[in-house]
Amino acid sequence: MTTHNMADIVKPRDGKDVEEAVRWALGGDKTLEIVGRGSKRALGRPSQTDMTLDLSNIAGVTLYEPAELVLSARAGTALFDIEKLLAANNQQLAFEPLDYGPLLGRAPGRGSIGGVIATNLSGPRRIKAGAARDHFLGVTAVTGRAETIKSGGRVVKNVTGYDLCKLFAGSWGTLGAMTDVTIKVLPAPETEASVLIGGLDDARACAAMVAAMGSPADISGAAHLPDHVIAFFDGLPKAEASTVLRLEGFAPSVKHREAMLAAAMNSFGPVSILDEAHSRVLWRSIREVRPFATESTRTRPLWRISTAPARGHEVAAAITPAAQMFYDWAGGLLWVAMPFDGELGAATIRAAVARIGGHATLVRAPAAVRAAVDVFEPAEAGLAALTKRVKESFDPQGVLNPGRMWAGV
Image 1 (spheres, rainbow, N blue to C red):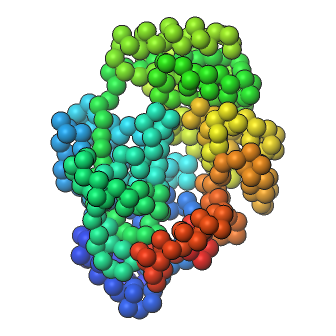
Image 2 (cartoon, rainbow, N blue to C red; image 1 turned 180 degrees about the horizontal axis):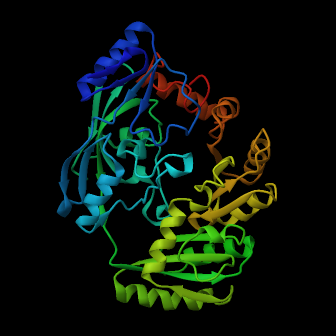
Image 3 (tube, one colour; image 1 turned 135 degrees about the vertical axis):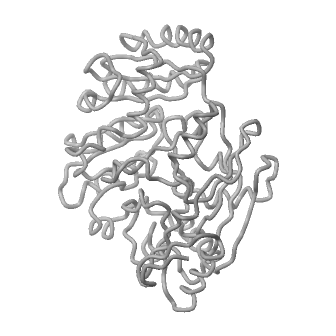
């Protein structure tokens, strides 16, 4: 185990080293910040811990069976390496995780597979393929009791660890330090195309996306890009508000569905088709939240709001007109960059979400602000009590990432 002065960073080489570090923390009444490769460190409440447990040395793919559609890797493995390996075998992570690095002012390609699962990251294909947790088959982790627990594994039918995977996905390192994960992978589609509707306002665009999702076209991405952010997206023919619907699969099927969807969308506005090359480029810039990952926009506080797709435009309308935003997940996910005014529009956003439904997460803001406002949606009493009980059963002394999600948890 590499130690850089026990007070700051420890870099375990394996699960035994992780157990040892947690035991040290328990014995000395210390707390640990769990970090994979550090790309999402500025997400959530700022860490107030005694030591950082850096898992980047616990890396490498340990099992990959393309025919079985299953991959196991150590938690610190770079997402970039996994995606490269899958692409070479014509496969992919169907939940399309985004790279948070550039949004948070860091270099791209630094995220880890453990970090992807811990934050339950999911990109545009979430509306069809589900979230990261739906592809998470097995985990080995060290709890805040310094015990190694294991669940699930490479056999998809093994459901013994079903709930453990569901618990760890989206737990932000507060229940255990994951050392190994097993995930389901899927064949990459042969081709893709996007149907584009030009010039719709937000309400009309949300109606079009909801109608498209209800059609038999089997859409794998639905986004609305208003005119004030359109210049940031690649692959678009015109600088006007664009509502884009992605179709993926075998070429004949994509062609057939494209014609069907174009006919159905005609009543909403002028329809055009983006070919495979332009569609790929566009969806990558949607997935990477390109408008808010540039030098000029990185200073704005950034929120991620999820709500019912049909009501996304209502949430947007309730927020200050000075905000910049676009919609993913057929209107159910809003990326909102607020003007910087001290309290970042937290009160406005929370009020809109409370009235219309959904939840809001503060993705980017200075550390002092993230320490002072609720970063995650405040949990209602019953859920908060349950969260606390779960935390206590895995980490009774509150050693792991204390306060990362909510103060005092």
